[in-house]
Each structure stands twice: as structure tokens, then as C-alpha cells.
Amino acid sequence: MRVVLVVVLALGMVASERPLECRQERHRPQIHFSVPSNWLNDPNGMVYYDGEYHLHYQYHPYSTQWGPMHWGHAVSTDLVTWTDLPISLYPDELGMIFSGSAVVDLDNSTGLQKDSVQPIVAIFTHANAGPQQQSIAYSLNKARDFVKYENNPVVPNPGVGDFRDPKVIRYNDKWVMVLAVGNKVDFFGSSDLKTWEFLSDFGIDPSQGSHAGVWECPDLVRIQHNGFYHWVLLVSINPGGPNGGSVTQYFIGSFDGKEFHSNQMDALWMDWGEDNYAAVSFSNEPKGRTLVMGWMNNWAYANELPTRSEGFNGQMTLPRELNLATVDGALRLISSLPEEFGKLRDPSQVFQLPLLKEIPPNGFYNVSEEIGFKSGLVEVDLAFNMVGIEGTSSIAICFVNRQRQEVCTGYDHERPVDKELFMNRELSGDLRAIGGLRRATAGRVKKDNIITFKIVMDLSAAEVFIDNGLTVFTALFFPDEPLDTLEIRHHAGSAESRVTLINGSVQGLRSMYNC
Ligand code: FRU
Image 1 (tube, rainbow, N blue to C red):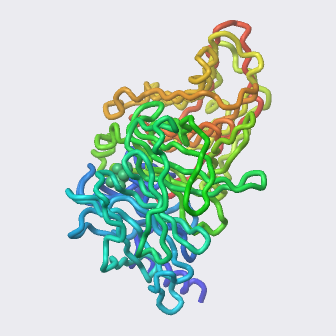
Image 2 (cartoon, protein in one colour):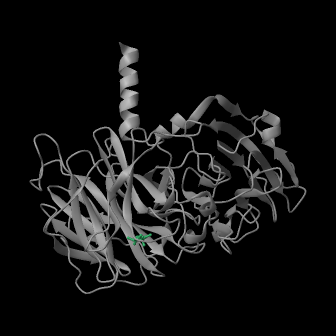
């Protein structure tokens, strides 16, 4: 009986939704969501409902380059394996479907609920040669089909060029929309998602944060820290990234349902790598976490990625949990992997490294040789004691292949304090697309002697979380074969320089695909 039931369920799934068929193109990400074919940019309409996380995305179904935007769609029950679903929103007479969000109308504020089925409402930008304006569509079958609202647009354009990317959140019994307008954001309020009134704006002061590019894809999230709630405004900006191109900045402040205030003047970056843009959060997250995903790419070169010759162009970061930490009295955003990521860990590939291992000055430690394990799909955790590091010394954690192509991240003692941490893809293989954006650097936020790295390696991307996620680097790369060997190097400016790996582990990861 049980066998029959399992077979019926499996067949039912195959018939309606494509499960994880094997994908083995050379640079196909194995642990990151990527577009099955053609083009993807921003994550859109991220919402949890009835056991499923929905990931919509900016999608051009007919080319590996940007074009008339649709909303592609995938779902996941576990945040690590994804099932592709048919396109959710097609362009229409009001224009292309640009970025936006989705919410579950739990209280039937729209009056669209049917029986006990709560509507999922998508709020997105209609973009044409003409003005950008905000529209809605709703689904009464778990986002499998959307119906566009007959009175679109719900927020018409007031006469400005850049007016897009609505992110809607619930605040008490009201809806609040945060919208990118030029290089500031506007807030709008609504009780039914259909009629909206302007509430306030933020970002007028050009000396607050970065205004080096156009503001896009904002989000407003509430994060608890030490018993207090803080509001964090995420704003993607293109260009203007600290290491070139597009990037996501954040402001920590307060929100009263109408206005957002922040005393923060400096630009703070969610990620210092070149490849994390348009990150926004899942709505209705069942555990109340702030879970975000970003587009793992950069407008500086997105249209030319080498994976175009493999038929696809576009992938997302891993889902990340955002929290706050206090460092030297200042609040900072920290990023970590959600517990669901553990599902990708292969229990038969766990390697503990020797404790208190000296990395010899001007030498290196071949970790893969020592543990007898090579793979381009790994999660590596390392903690170093740098109390004895001297002069122009550095620690480089490098992933290398037989052709000596490599990607390295690490700490550079000689550099100015705002450039000590690095992510280097100078020798990573095909560099044609990424051009000059090869080496990203960041200042270290924490200043003590123990530095930690968590590095998640996929076949064409790495995510690096330094000092428990205080500094993050996300980078794409395109080697000729997987970077499957791990080396830890200590370039020493003086023979007395000491670097000790105090603790380390290598965890093999499983692909999300059934190959
Ligand atoms: C950000 C963005 C959004 C826009 C979308 C168009 O990457 O430019 O502002 O809605 O992409 O695809």
C-alpha cells in the first residue's frame, strides 16, 4: 500500500512539475538555484505559503541575455532543492514584468479569498517604453496561476523615470510598500493592496549612504537583537559597489509604520563580493527569520557570462539568514546559512583538520592531500590565530585545480585596514566577462587575533563568510575544471611570522540534482 502511494505521488509530481533532473553543464551550479535555461536576474515574489518557499525571478525565456521580462518560478520545501514551475507572469499591454514581491493575504484584506484558500498577491512593476508603475496579480492555487487585477496599475507613475521594484510588508493591520525612486525610496500604505497612499521617503540626503548609482530592489526588514527590534532597509545600488558594479547596501534604523529614520551616514554593504545583487527577503517566513536570496551576478558584466554557451545565464545566492551583531558599540548586519543548508552536507564526507596546525612561513598546507579528499563542492570552516602574524604577511585560502587555476580568499596584514580581507579570482580561468573586477577587498570589522572563515564552494561560485558573517564575499568564477584542491598559504613578510590554524573542517556537499 505504502509503495503504491509513493509511486502515485511521484508520478503525480512528474506529470505537473519538473523535479530535479540531472544538470551537468560544466559551470552549472550544483548547490545554488540556477535558471534551467536562458536568462535570470533579480529574485522576485519570494513568499512562503503552505509548506512551500516560492522563488520567482526576472526571466527572459528566449535568450541568455536580458530582454522582455517575465516572472519565472520555482518552489522548494526545504530551501535547498528547487522544483521549476511554469512562468507566473507574462508581459502584457502595460509592459514588461519587472521586479517585485509577493505576500499572503492572511486576513482577506483584498476580499479575494475563496473558501479557505488565502490569496497570494504579487506586487510588481509594469515597465514599458513609457512610465514604470506598480500593479498586482493574485493566485488562489498556491502561486500556480496568477490573475492580473483588472484595475492595474495600483500605483501610477507620478512623472519620474525610475519608479520600481515594490516590496510589500505587513505592519500591524496595514500594508506598507517600499519602492525605489531614482536614488531614494518612497513608502506607500494600503489597507487592501489595491489603493495606495504616499507615506514618506528616505534617502534625500546625498551624504547618507551611497548614492553613486540608481537605487533598486529595496526591502525593509525587522530584526530582533538583544531584546530590541531594529528596522533594516536594504537597498541595491547600481553601479557604486565598493569593488565595482552593482551591490546591496543597508541602513539600520527605526520605522513607525510611516517613516523610516536612520542616523547611519556611512554606506554599509551586505556583501563585499562582486556577485550579490537585488537581495530581498521571503515574506511570511514561518519561523520569523529574515531569509534573503540575491542574484549572484553583477550588471557590470551579467549579459556576457561564459555560461551563455552552456545555454543558461543566471543563478541565486544561497538563502541566507540576516541578523544583527554589536561590534565595538556599533550595529552590523551578519549573514549566515540557514539550518536547512545542512541537508546538502554529505555525512560520509566530514573531515576534521588537526588542531593547532602551524602554517609555515612562505609555505603552504595542502589540506586535500592530508585528508585524501578532493571536491569542488565543499563547505570549509577555518579558524586562525594571527597573534604572531608579522610584516607584509598574509593568509590565503585557495581552491585550485590541476591547471593551477585558483580562487583565493584571506587576510592581508600589509594592506591598509580598509582592505585587509580579500577575495581574489585573478587566476580563476575564463576572465573575459568579469574584466577588471577580479579582486575584491574589505576592511575587517573585528580587530581581534582570531579570524574565522566559512567558505561554501560550488562549481562556479563561492560564498565566504568571515568572522561569523560580519564580512561576506560572493564571487562567480569560470575555471576549466572544478577547483577541487584546498591549500592554505602563509605568504610571510618575515621569517618570524606565525599563523596557526586552530581549528578546521572540510565538509563534502551533495548536489541538489539527481545525477
Ligand atoms: C535590478 C533591476 C530592477 C528591475 C529589473 C529589471 O537588477 O534593474 O530595478 O526591476 O532589474 O529586470
